[in-house]
Amino acid sequence: MLQNDFKNKPFYLNDEDIKWVNETFANMSTLDKIGQLFFLVSYRNDEEFFRHIACDLKVGGMMCRTMFKEDLIKSISSVQSKAKIPLFIAANLEAGGNGIVKEGTKIASQMGVAATNDVINAKLLGKVCAEEAKAVGANFAFAPVCDIDMNFRNPITNTRTFGSDKDMVLNYANNYMQEVQAHNMLTSIKHFPGDGVDERDQHLLTSINNLSCSKWDKTYGYVYKNLIKNGAKAVMVGHIMQPAYTKYFNPDIVDEDIMPATLSKELLQGLLRKKLGFKGLVLTDATTMTGFCQAMPRDKAVPLAIEYGCDMFLFTKNLDEDFKFMIDGLNNKLLSEERLNEAVMRILATKASIGLHKNNNIPTLENADKIIGKKEYKDIAYKIADKSITLVKNKENIIPLDKDKIKNILVYEIESGENALGYDRAVGMTDKFIKLLEVEGFNVTKFTPGDRYEGKQSKFKDMVESYDLMIYVANLATKSNQTTVRIEWANPMGMNCPIYIHSVPTIFISLENPYHLLDVPRIKTYINTYFSNDYTLELLVAKLFGKSNFTGISPVDVFCGKWDTKL
Picture 1 (spheres, rainbow, N blue to C red):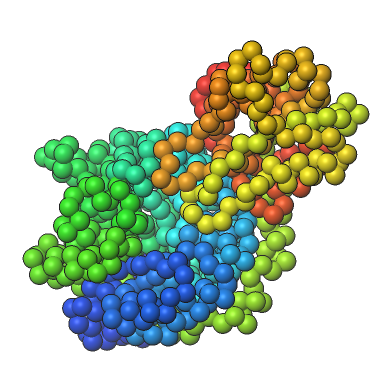
Picture 2: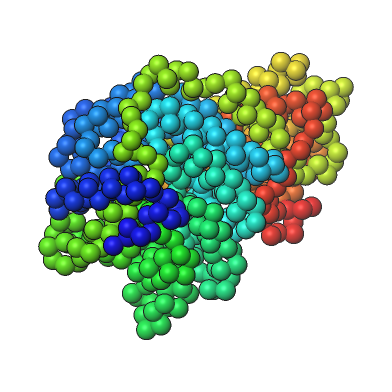
């Protein structure tokens, strides 16, 4: 079967490990094997749910959404103590330990890390993610994102990526991956065959990576090939079509039959396994996404995802029904016994590669208390926030701000809800920013629209004479189930648009999305922070007044390819 591969990359199993894999596999029933294919999700401490998935279904893995430390430890302890075969415990550890535990440290978005222009910070991000996550019982990081942010209109990649340069993406992703795996923890490079080309979101439809084979090889292929060469143990596959390579491996295929990578034997077996030589674990992205659900009827899609080359099935739309679809698929020959066995052996080998069969996989609150939120991690978060803040435009040379010339400031608030991954995001940032300005001694007013009727709005002269400085604070994060990340101005006629830029010095600060110059091209002074952690605003204000320097670099084209954004 696969046993000859298990001593080599990426597993590196010894004879004792392989013996465990073989003996465990030999003692599994067909239903036990099917259970291992499933990677479910947990949102809360639910003892009955954990008993069911560990004892009845015997699933292979559980992904945890962010919970408070005590509930999280109870949850993971419960499921691992009940399981005969230890589970993968995963989380979206893209920005810090806060990706799994609410008390965890938020370090930075991946783009924020890249903006420091120091790859050691990718290792530090990996260190904090691994240590805080392991402290609560996790063993699998659904990270790093190794997508390339080629299309600034893409609503989901954005600051989750290390940028738009393939070498930067590879270098930073590799350092993150190596650091996490050095902690004896899995990483999952994602989202094969590559998000960031389409302007649409695979959460809402089957999106497309429309690069030619040659262009793909030089970009996404370059990144994946090298990460695989460097020991990547798992690949997360997106609900993303790659027509060029699908047709390369299957010249007779018609457009209507092209499938997303999660359901494409051409991309899974031809491109990923054969051309790129990946031998490790392949798992789908969340199969509740529309990109998967609309590709074919679900009763076929569930078993065919495994038959065509995925080893694990992430999440379920309906738990009992999807299990039945997998069982029926095996009985109806949509899923072969050969592929089932191959997938299960690879799952077991991957678990053995990080010693889950040897470890005590039960976390304790006492140990977590020693690790979560350590000063060392907070210092890393501070350092990265300080180094990443980027002064993109300073055309009027008003930064550093001159306190002798500024007394009254008008602040415009542009905020939104939760971010792409659904866990807590900093809100109320504009109010916090205003308080910091007030501490500096300024009179600060928060903009509120007055009379909305034409002819009755604020007088131009009154506005110009009332304020010495205007500042926009945008806090618009990318998130799933969203088709675009653009500023929605107040009606009518954009009452809060920057219309006084030729008369009052105006600064635009984006805390999350680096591409807002598209909507405020004539702004003369523009700043990106890429993320907000506990230190961002304080460091930003210090830089505004020259107490420290702006050192961040832009990992993407913040001018969006437009000429007017540079004016």
